[in-house]
Image (tube, rainbow, N blue to C red; front, side, top):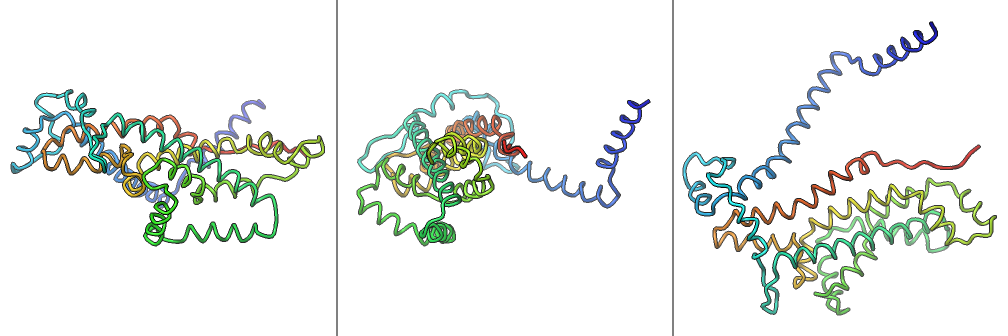
Length: 310
């Protein structure tokens, strides 16, 4: 009898949570339609790339100039050669050397690695220090970081480029490393807010046991930020992988997939070999799809659990 009452109560509670009024149903329906339209706009370019990356170049050009062109018409013959030939695509650097697709892939990997590791770890350290240690310059440093986030990119690009020239970092991988260490922004605000909400009692317990500030940070505080750090690493990787402006401006002799494909668009326009270009775009999108599909739960369900009792 008692079990029956518990089941009835749980069903009543579930009905209260799931039962909606007519107005709520209409609102949910409208929101659902908006998200459906938004999803279609995201799937549309991927589907277009996938289908047209198998087209014959001549057939693709002729189809585009004919009336009633259907961008989603299936190819008469699916040409896998377009994907086999993407590693023959190349761009030319400032000294006339050809940079091929596999080299662009390597540049994308080390660029993302430097950016992710440098940016996230530096923001962890800076956010922890400014949130937990109060000294005379802490407020000034925090204000400068927030102020730097409000300055438009167009207002700092020229001075940043001049600084890279002056320091001898232009067109070298060292610029990527230095920029990742000083590139505060969204990552800093996330880590600053995270550590701000962690009780200082954890560190005090470490000090009582004879531990140092480094012990408190690396063995107690940092492990609690594990999920937040992983989330920022994923988001920073996706942003860096798609970033073509940095390579074009600061290290053009080390083109990444993003910047290389941006430059290859002009070559495809002249040669008419758009299917190979689309195949290259699909090749660059695959890592992002894999990372996002594997880590979507981490991004949307990120949470932290404390260990303080009483």
